Image (cartoon, rainbow, N blue to C red; front, side, top):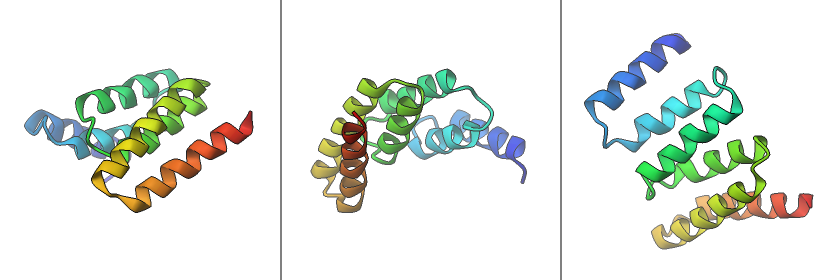
Length: 108
């Protein structure tokens, strides 16, 4: 399956199961090479809004915001992700989110 087929498949999956956060997450990942950063920021932030308890989205959303020169937004996303990781007791994600946050703060 090539990239355009995967994107079409994921869009169909979203139509069939709009409550499935993974389909939205996977679509954003697939579209990273085809959309500009501003479009990706909107899409990732939409995923966070629709699925605030879907922890994997926080790292990716923060990353694209940082790459799009939205540093403060990236920091806010990481802080929310850290709180969610603590609540969900997801130690691996917690470590990754904290590390990413520290790296952003050190860059200043």
